[in-house]
Length: 291
Image (cartoon, rainbow, N blue to C red; front, top):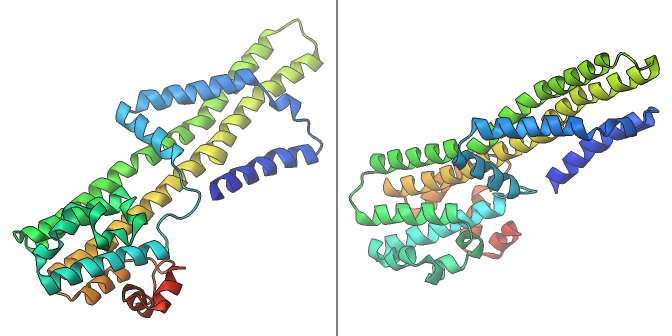
């Protein structure tokens, strides 16, 4: 919703302001200018990226979320799941959670959090590292190094679509100038036209500069920025899980371990210590915090 509202606000502000000032929107519709700018931008995008980056960009743009995906309630669910997993392992032994980890879809612990079961990133991170912890063959610093490496690799890969779009947005104003120059060349080459028609042709040519700048900073750059924000949200979720599992590996009780995870969160999404404790223990206050 926020993406659509933002783009509509840009559209109405620019074109609505132009119309209110007495301008006519008709001359702004220049299909050939759009073809030159859009085609050149698309060609540059294809030439600058490999198949993996192109596919990732198209997939990411098509799946852009209209609102924050990882909010306070989702963090509470993740920390509650980790609390119950680590608590069960502490009470009954690490092997007691082996089946939960191997078959999360059949686990009573995981089934309490269907949204987490539908999130491959969260589910894979928890199950993979719980398996490593179950093996008993990794020291805490080794586990932390591996988790850090995975988080960095995820962040690098997830930033590829945003980087590709930022490069397109940087190129669009230049392509707009190219289209404008070609339009001016066309106008100046028409030696047999009068001043009125010459002025109209130059005005049409200048639309190219406008379109290049508008598409760059009014459409493509905001989409790239939104992807950046969503990558940051996902990385923060990974850091929350990493801190919780690492604290547990270092001998912390489950309640203290999830407190480490809570401290990794931004203040806007971070529940208070009392909210977290109430939620994971399943009290009415915890249910209210989720809602």
